[in-house]
Each structure stands twice: as structure tokens, then as C-alpha cells.
Image (cartoon, rainbow, N blue to C red):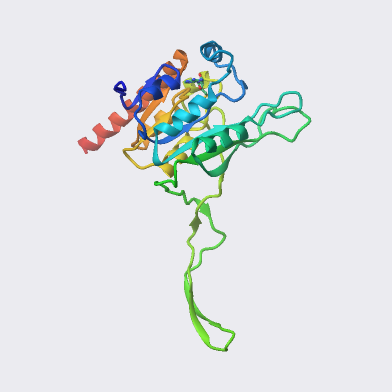
Length: 286
Ligand SMILES: C[S@@+](CC[C@H](N)C(=O)[O-])C[C@H]1O[C@@H](n2cnc3c(N)ncnc32)[C@H](O)[C@@H]1O
């Protein structure tokens, strides 16, 4: 019998422990970014995992199989990842991971790009500036919930119209052309400004070395889930996904192995909860 798991809670433990408490097909959407090839040092967490899993820097394959098991049919996993370059050679682990997810049973629904405008010193001086990461959108079967964001301005909007087309035999065929509005669906390259005041306005979040932007988390949550759904982040870091779930009316579950990062996440969530409460009080008073 699996242990009871609470929603809207971040578990300070390895994600494999949290997932072992989840029944099959429990999660609607997972949005996460793993430690990238040890590109960052996450206090002692990497070292802890190394000793726990005897030589692996990150138990990726076990985590991938568990993510497949706990994802609902039609559910989605968004895996945001980049590669390290070691001695003029990119590791390519991002691709290896995407292909392994396919072996687990996921569809590679879309390979999306998270682009960042270049700032500061990016990478080494021998390659072009590194300005993007992959966002692998993986699904268990076809995604059941798709809410595409339509904020890309079309060059011009056009009303639909009717006309005729002459066929080879000379007859005229009545045809109608669909129109399109001022805005269309986005491309699959999403660009976000990053850093203080851009990724988030919570200064405490920057005590974590590798946060992703709140808007990135929010845009995936909106795109691949509906209000009331359960969204999981197995590597919650500073709590970005949980914060966006609170604001977007989704339930979250998180795992984070490092207790200092859990404290950062809880501090951010408590500020959001207070703001939501104040707004609700104002609404009831009006
Ligand atoms: C790239 S960061 C995630 C940052 C997060 N998206 C944010 O916006 O704050 C990866 C996180 O995974 C955590 N981590 C690494 N291995 C883990 C494991 N096995 N279980 C849970 N958390 C883990 C690290 O401590 C680190 O905080």
C-alpha cells in the first residue's frame, strides 16, 4: 500500500522517494529542470545523490521511468535542459535524455527552445554565444489538454471570404477561405528575459543558482493543464512551478533534495498566499 501524499506540499527529499508514494497515473503535468551535467553546484545535493546511488551523478533513468509511471494517460512532461561543454565537446546529454524518455514510452510531442537574450559573458569565446536551452515536451499518448497561447501578432488580420475556382473541365467551384485574426499561436521558440526583475521579482529566489523564469513555468502550466489539475516538479529548486500553480489555480506537488532551497520556496509561497488572501478579502468587502 502506498503512503498518503498531500497536495500543495513540497517534500524535502529525493524525487524518487516522493514518486514511490504516488499511485500510477496520478499526475496531469510535470514541469521541471534537472541539474544540468553538474553545470551548477547545488550545495551538497549532488554529492548526496552520488553516495546514495553509488557512482551515478544523477539517477536519471530511474527518475524517467518513475515519471512515466506516475503520469496520467494524455498527461505531459516538460523537461527543460541544457548541456555542458567539456574540452570543446558538448555532452549531448539533453538528447540522450529525450531519447530515453521515448524508450520509457513517452511521445516526444515537441522539441521547444527556451531562448534568452545574450547578457554578460556567455560560454567561451570560441563558439557563438550560447543563448538557449531545450524544452522537451513529452506526452503519454496524445496530450489531452492543449491550450495554445495565441499572443503572436499576425502581419495583418483578414476576414474570411467566398470566391470561385475554375476546375479543369471549365466549371466554376464555389470556395470559401478562412480568415485569421490579429493574433495567432506562438512559435515553439519562447524567449524570456532573465535575471533580477525579469525571471521573478522575488529577490530571495536568486539565492538559488539556477532558477527558470516564472513566465516560462506559467506558460507551460497554462498550455498543458487545466484548473484543478495536479502539477508536479520533482526538482523544485526555489519553488517557481509551485508559485505559478497557486496563481493559475492548479494543485502542486514538489520534491527538492536540498533543505535550504525548500525554505526559499516556502518563503515565496507564503508571500503569494498572503497576497491572494488580501485580494480575496478586498473582493468580499466590495
Ligand atoms: C535546475 S534546479 C531547479 C530550479 C527550479 N526550476 C527553479 O526555478 O527554482 C535543479 C534542482 O534539483 C534539485 N535536485 C537534484 N537532485 C534531486 C533529486 N534527486 N530529487 C529532488 N531534487 C533534486 C537541486 O537541489 C536543484 O535545486
